[in-house]
Image 1 (cartoon, one colour):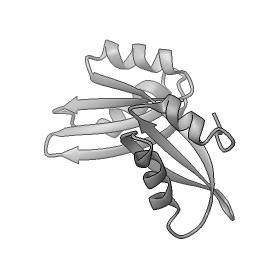
Image 2 (cartoon, helix red, strand yellow; image 1 turned 90 degrees about the vertical axis):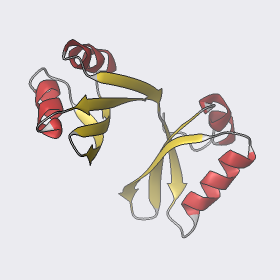
Image 3 (cartoon, helix red, strand yellow; image 1 turned 180 degrees about the horizontal axis):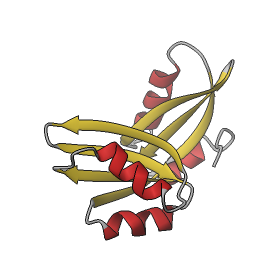
Length: 130
């Protein structure tokens, strides 16, 4: 799964602008995060049609960054995120982003992007969702 980071300079309503642009053009947003910094904003999103989303966003002159995101199914337990972080960094891999998604009682999915996703795929090969 690929994540798109959209940097909006001076956008009046960046969430509406981005979600409207994609939704009005048939792109389904699967996950989104948003942060506002004065007149600038950063949105991180995952879309069902990565290429179309990139094309639409590029056509509007947004600054875009992309990154592959891995989905790892994990047990819901205290300290689980710390355990994952330690295991990955002990393997010499740097974490770029990490988010937790609750999927059911007892299980979670962690979305993670690193500087060495191939290594993380090896470490969590039996728990990968994608």
